[in-house]
Amino acid sequence: MRVSDFDMILKIVSLFLIGMLVLAMFGRLRVPGRGRTGKCPDCGRFLIGKGPCACKKGRS
Image (spheres, rainbow, N blue to C red):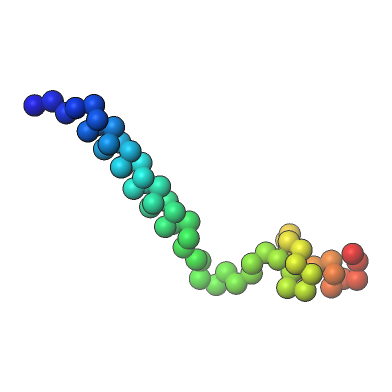
């Protein structure tokens, strides 16, 4: 009893798609306690580090 080439390719493709689905589900998980989005709520710039945004420091 031999598995045809089409059946083997179908199994490989379906396993690949299932694996991608699992990775996508893990990528959408939210970590509790992580409230910062990474953008300043006032000016919309991306925040780097833990300090305040440059717009709040008086620099632009």
